[in-house]
Structures are given as structure tokens and as C-alpha cells.
Amino acid sequence: MPAAPAVLEGSAYVVDGDTITINRTQVRLFGVDAPELDHPYGKKAKWELLSLCKGQCVRAEVAAFDTHGRTVAKCFLPDGRDLSAEMVKLGMAIDWAKFSGGCYRTLEAPGVRKKLWLADARQKGRMHVWDQFEARRAARRAED
Image 1: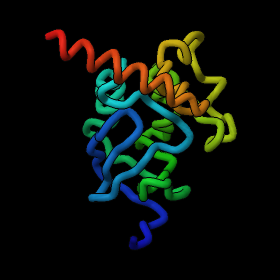
Image 2 (image 1 turned 45 degrees about the vertical axis):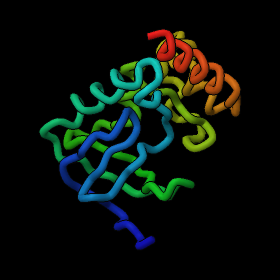
Image 3 (image 1 turned 60 degrees about the horizontal axis):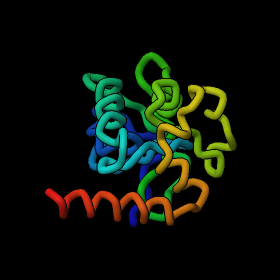
Image 4 (image 1 turned 90 degrees about the horizontal axis):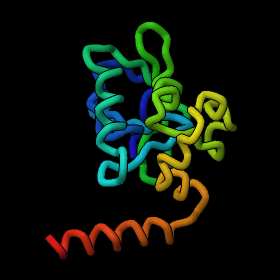
């Protein structure tokens, strides 16, 4: 994989609540976790991030690469706001201390981890919770 530049700047295409694409490079927001699109609040998280980025030139300062090959970056709006911090403040993402060192935890709204329970379970390695969610969803689809 070719190395990404240390800084990317441009319009952001929003993939989901914690992933954007800038100049054809997929960028994972640093230090936070948002729900997947097919999980509760997933689409709402995507739309909140879209509303933050729309019409803005986003600056992504590359911090690392994740296990999925995505560029991980601290992303900023022209006015200096950190997109990760903004998503946490909006209650659409939670701090992922394993990667952030806990720098966004104080911005979390009370009860947000319970609200975004699948993202919290992923962080804590409770994958059986996801399996239960997928089984319930499959059962609902079979009934329809």
C-alpha cells in the first residue's frame, strides 16, 4: 500500500459516522467509534458527520493506519474544530481510549455508551452482543 501524505485536504465524502474519504483516500476519524450504518443510530451518525463536513474543506493530519488499511487521522474543519470531538459532543460517537488515550471521554454526554451499546460492546470485545443483535435482526426479516 502506498504511503498516504502526512496531511490530506479537500472535500470529504462521508462513508459512515467515523469514516470519510478525502482525495480518494479513506480516512478513519482518530480516537472515536461511531455505530455501523446497519446498527442503531448508524445512519443518524453518518448524517450528523455529513452536516458537519458539507461544503467544508477538511484537513486530515495522518496519525496511523488501522488493521483495515485505512488512514487514521485527526480531522479538522476550517474553523479549527476537531471532527472526532464534534461527533462525541453530538452523542454520535464515543471515545475509544485504546486509540485516543481517553482524550475525548470528557466530551461524552451522560448515557451515550448505553445509547450506542453496540459500539461500546465492540470496544470491550463483547462480540457475542453483536451476534445476538444480528440474530434478532435476521429473525425480524424472516417474519416480514
